Image 1: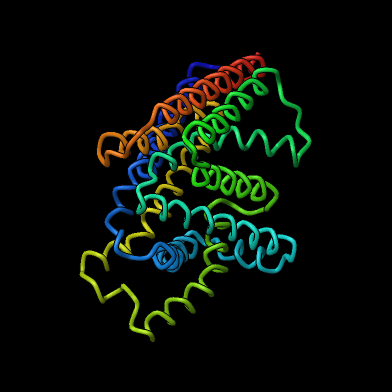
Image 2: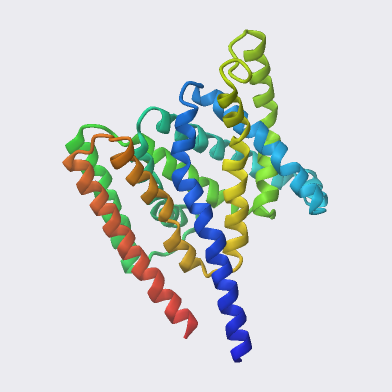
Length: 303
């Protein structure tokens, strides 16, 4: 590699980091945003998120002259079925996350997204017949032991954390086989979800139970702004990951759940038990082992 190529590669990497870090920070600080909408039912908030995200994404795709991508997807029955499935999983994931934030389960949300990379590994074994390396086996074992320990000692099954981790894991697993870009796929998913969303919001309006334009201007702006909280970090993430190695993205993705954890403990003062502390310690240890394995494999691949 020439010095000019090395300089270009470094500039691309720096640009990638400059895109990816803000995307994870937006995701990580998003509980502050969703807390403002605490007076709006979580399912209604989800429906608004779908509608406004679709309206935000459509002009972006039209201006980028990528209309043909959407039309190609809609003409392919297999891709349509795949995206219907991913629409379901991302919808459940978003609903559980919004519900968790507004019912003071930010700590469990943090745990769920710390567990997500390990769930991806586990799903790869179950559905893609991938073979685990020794360090990956150790990481999955540590994470599993942490969940079992929390359930026994704390006396509460961490359903929020597991729901977030597995719905996002299944979403990623299924989206891998869909021949569509990240933004294009999200647009089609929002298009599918917008039909029940519009029906539900229209029903609420006819019954006089809708929140938009009925509570305050602040709530109205935050409901409409859910499009930015959804689409902006995704766009930044997509731009960044194209310029970075996956191992780098893997490390940076822990920014979001770390922000959740700090918000839960220091801002929202959620109670944290000894069992939860030990569980987080086991999950962090598992992620450390997993990250070491990723670095070793990356170094061998480069050589």
